Image 1 (spheres, rainbow, N blue to C red):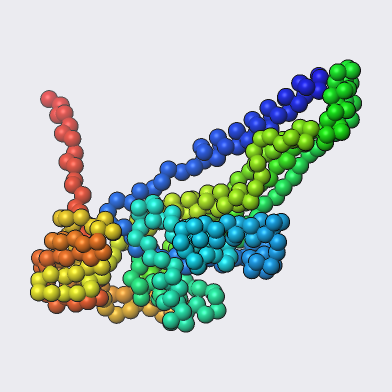
Image 2 (cartoon, rainbow, N blue to C red; image 1 turned 135 degrees about the vertical axis):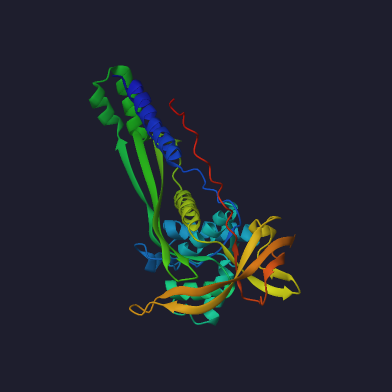
Length: 374
């Protein structure tokens, strides 16, 4: 085989590898899971960094030109500045939590409370001073700001691995046995750097826990992985193919986040949606969910009184509270973040009462008549 044919074959193989990897990744992507009915109220706590080398990189002590972690943080901060956000990101975990917040909003399944709101409550109540937010402290803070669930997490893997192969012009000439024309091309490639291949793979793994704020129980523990690879080819010092750059870890992180959004959405449908009464005026109750939460006309709510806390005597774990049905109300006026519902039954409602969507009866389909034998 001549040198020219060998070069063409090697380039074709490298491009096919990239193309096959892209097709496989696209086939593995899940369709976004949609939640019907009111949006769940959720908040995300800033993620911790626990990947290898975090001590010297996440704090910004390395070189941004050679350290993929610092380079990515620089990209995050540039994006924040472009968006008018002066806070920026100090760690990968902070950037990952912010990215998850944005993805949860875009999914249209959730009414998302900002991380700043969550962190403020944690600090005010001295629940996160050690930097380690537990399910119990997260649940307590979540109850204070009125969300259904809290997401806490850890970035356990974050980095990039590079590898490469170089075939010199001399080696190519020996392998091909080359004629004079191939020998001359081999010599030219040898002098100019020969034929080279480079590959980089970025990998991100995030471990999250989804916490029910009513009970403080972990209702989802998920490890989500994202990978992004790139192949480059250089011939006689000229590079072709996919470039290798620091944004690959950003793409891998995006994959990991998208998978988390789907996992969280699928799990949340198993938790009863709830809101709270914020005000009672005559025969009207004001509920802290409105158009932003997908509340629509005609919805009927059940209103419960919160009773005694239920504590497991063996573990001391909260099992929720007793609830007593106090009455029902139907939407009459819907604002952006508040709904006014007219009371249809019950009395003695007050701020803080729990609001749940009344289940819609499922129609029973009668069995098909069977033919009778004569």
